[in-house]
View (cartoon, rainbow, N blue to C red):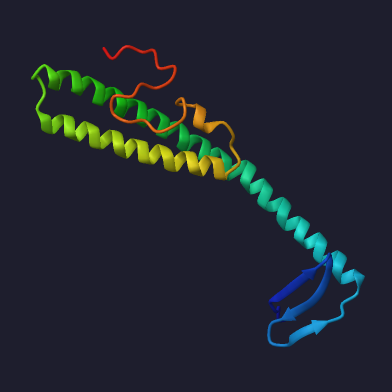
Length: 147
């Protein structure tokens, strides 16, 4: 039996019409079709929720953790090179590269944070004290020494 693509329009909780590919619109459907369509929609919503809970959120959480670690490493590298450059022990090009790496890490962190929020994770902006990190700005709660 050949299957056909079916599209439904639900208006005020009732199926107003069903389009079956190749046959045009079928109107005036009864309550049995409405209930069947609602059940199918519920099954699809539950499947999307399971996907979000078991796939999307864990991936977003791990991407955000990696971005946190990369941002912290870039910040520490920039701070160390900044001190060395002021002392004349590091070439300016090396400091420029560290600054670029910090900006890239910040951008990747922002993207991971957006992805995490979009997947329903809450509080991700607090993992590094929130806000954007710029060269010279310290992380909230980052009490580690640079040495």
